[in-house]
Amino acid sequence: MQLKPADEKFVTSSTKDEILPVFQMGQEVRLIKDIKNDGTYPFAKVGDTLMKSGATGYVRHIGDFLQTIRVYEVDFLKEGFSLGCREFELEAISEADDEIEQELEWLRKHRESKLNKEDR
Image (cartoon, rainbow, N blue to C red):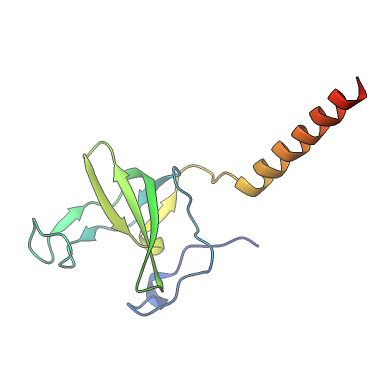
């Protein structure tokens, strides 16, 4: 199943996000809309633009607010700034790694090497 970012017109402060995150930690992302201070950033006025659309960064942490709203902490390295972003504010630049498939592949190789050692 291919997950897609939430569509902004359907997102409210109480909207429950998809069960699985769309982006992964370490994945490179780009802002697709300006991020304005909603009052949670103490060093700017409410409504001030904190980061412009087009800025790129890396997902540093994935958290939940009120157990329903997924927030991605994104490090904007060039700007020297980290911000919390919602899925509808981001787009992927790099492909997400399929961590489950990578883990299964590691297990397969490990089992093969173990069997090869026992055959000797």
